[in-house]
Length: 256
Picture 1 (cartoon, helix red, strand yellow):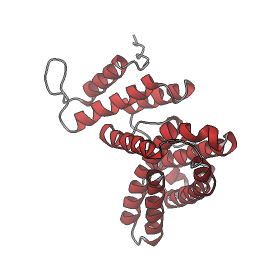
Picture 2 (cartoon, helix red, strand yellow; picture 1 turned 30 degrees about the vertical axis):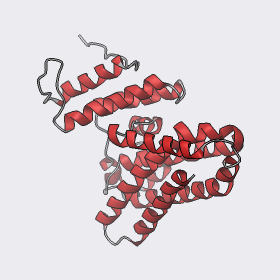
Picture 3 (cartoon, helix red, strand yellow; picture 1 turned 90 degrees about the horizontal axis):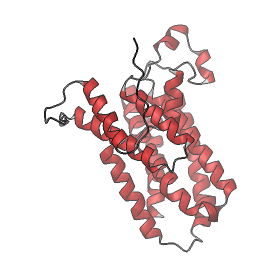
C-alpha cells in the first residue's frame, strides 16, 4: 500500500508549494511537476490497482473514483494545452488540486481500508505499480481520451469559464501541434471505445512515443540505417511501427 500512498503525499507537497510560490515561473515548475506525477499515478491505478480491488471495494466507490480520474485528466489536458497567457491557468490548477485532495481523502478513508481486506500479495502488487511507472517514464506517457477531447475542441471548449475571458485572450489559447499528436489522439479515442484493456492500442501508443522520443534525441534511424532528420519522416516511421505492433491507425486518404 505504501506505493499507492506515496504519490498523494508528493502531490500534497506540490500543492502546498504552489500556494506559497511568489513568481509565475515557480508556479509553472510546480504545475509541470505535479501534472506529470498525477498522470503517472492515474495510469498505474487505472491499469493495475483499480482492477485488482474493484470487486472487493464495490462498484459505487470505484465508479466514483473512475469519474474523479476523468475530471482530473480533463483539467490536466486543458493545462497541457494552455500557457501563462491564459488568465484562468492558476485557478484551473487550484481546482485540480482541490479535486485531487478530495480523491485522496476518499481513497485513504474508504477505498484502501476495504482493499486491505483482500487476500492478495500487496508487495507484489506494489512492485507491479512501480515497474509500470518506470516503463512509462522510459517510453513516455501515452495520450488519453481526455487529451483527444480537448485537442478536438482546440481551446473553444476549454471550460464554461472561458466565456469570461477577454476576446484577445480567447484568441491566444494555444492549439495542439498537428501530425503525430493528432494520430496519437485518434488512437486514444479508438482505444477508449474498445475499453482501456486493449493491449494492442496501448502498445501502439507506447511505440509512437518511443519512436518520437528517439527522433528528438537524434537517435532515430530509417530502415536503410540513415539518421532521420525530418519530423515528417519521423512521424511516418512512428505510425508504421505502431501499425506493426497491432495498433489500428487509419491511413490518410490521398487528395487529387
